[in-house]
Structure formats: C-alpha cells, structure tokens
Amino acid sequence: MKIDGNRLNLDQAALQRLERAATDAPKPATASRTSTGDTVQVSADAALANTAVKAIHDAPEIRTALVDRMRALLASGELGNDAGQLADSLIASITEGTGSVAKK
Image (cartoon, rainbow, N blue to C red; front, side, top):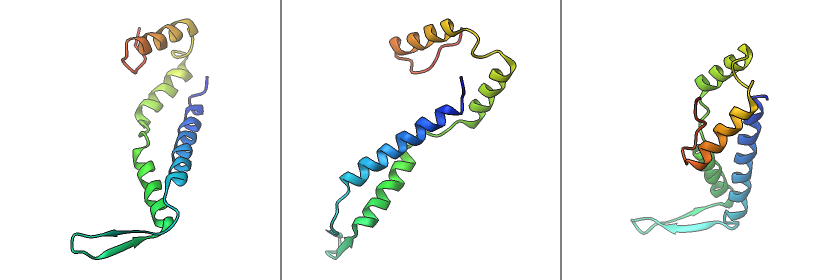
C-alpha cells in the first residue's frame, strides 16, 4: 500500500473536471451587459481560464499533517497490517454514511 498513490487519483479527477469544463465552455466570445448598460465581451480562452481556476478552487485540499501522520504510522508498522480490519472499517464507513474510516 502506497499513500503517495492517492495523489494520482486527485490529479486525474482535477484533469477530468478541467476536460469537462473545456467541453462545456462557450467557444465564441460571449457578451453580457453590465448594470450600467455597457457590453462586455469575454473570449473563449478567458472563459476557459476562469473555469479552470474555479475547478482548482473546488478541488479538495490535502491535509498534509494527516498525510505525514499516516506515513509515520505506515513506516512504524502500525498501519496496513490487518487487511481484514481495514476492509471492515471501509465497509462500515460506507454503510453508516460517515464518509471516514472508523478507528478500531
């Protein structure tokens, strides 16, 4: 079990959101009116950049303290020794709707 492998999934999920945003982004320049009645045109590239920034801000934050703690537990042999207990804990967290792995 390698904890660093989880980062790859986050990168792939962010890439998928960006790809979806790119396909959903308007291709031609878009125009909108301001409250003063002026017209503002935004290029497709600017709209895509705005969507990319929003996708980055919506990505989950990495809790580095928790990652460091898990690495230390893994290195000391306290984590990852009982696959059955891990599986039970994962199943319990899903069925109970807690969204986190229970400590036993």
